[in-house]
Image (cartoon, rainbow, N blue to C red; front, side):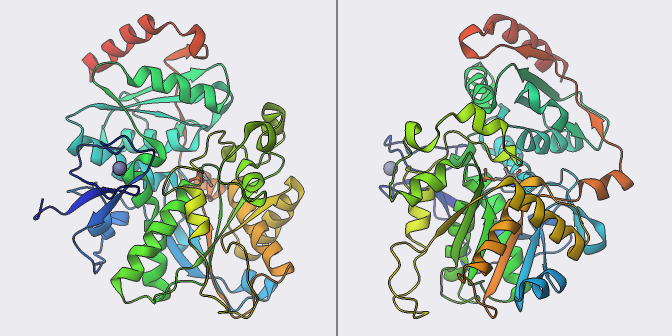
Length: 442
Ligand SMILES: *Cc1c(COP(=O)(O)O)cnc(C)c1O
Ligand SMILES: [Zn+2]
């Protein structure tokens, strides 16, 4: 494996694995695999969108794209909050600032390298992606733009999120499920077992994590150093795990400082399983305690893309490990001993909307509801004194620019090819037949 660009390594046992679209340790550990790249010093190329950072993406070749996160120093919001060093990592459509992600969320950073990795490493299998909408839309957009086929599974209530900015939907097989996000995931799992298809892998897929890590890479090159704090709204926590891994790699690079940023993540009340488990000091999520009345709670959320019911919290290398290991050096800030350093906030709908109004007013671009959760968490951290005015802060705006996009682009709704019942009533034979025809027509 010596000459390979990268290999995979199990967080638990350190076993080295050559990538065959491998998403689990061959020893069977309940652990994430992570990429180890041969290049320790990162190059930034130009003209290739997010693939400017291909050194640290688990693909051999770049896909043609202009999609990339941008980082800009916030003048107005920073001033409003009394923060001198607030940087915004923006994922979405904001052409005035050089942001051209037409799916308007950072899920596009996952979709591009994941589809490419599947093409290179899975032996030509077709990816099955299940999501509450933003992930599936990102994969659909890339599919539509590149012709790489994808099977997307979404809950019926998320169908309105399924559109692309190009008209060709020939290679997208969209399935709507009469249920919620978790039902869609269960259906996706069943379908992915069919011949010629492969499960995309979620948090276990290194292309998804390293793809989202481009937000931190772009920020590091733009800020010339690592931030003191990183703020993000989380559903699964995959993006925050990605940030943690990427900061670690950047520390290894040597040019951006050697201090792991404190990672501050937030969820939207009343559905906040990660906040609930973390604040109780537990390494496990207990459904009866952390997700009581889940269905009702999810219906009340302003940012329902954050409604993941089975986030990778306890898994080795997951959210709990991430929060535990972003501890500052003892006494660094003279704030006394803190039990943990990673931090979580639960944000009410009202706090979201207030934060959104403030952000839109100061920065002039519209937000995905999930991004407003992150903005609200930053406001809370300022209010409770967790961050100080000189701290260097990276605020990950995980999605935005939908309104801006509408002024420039047409949105083509994707029609569902099948409507299915949740797993227990699933008519798999029908699905198989339809999928076979879809594959034949590709
Ligand atoms: C998916 C999503 C998130 C949450 O990301 P996770 O990696 O699941 O924690 C946040 N914001 C937006 C806009 C998203 O689409
Ligand atoms: Zn292992």
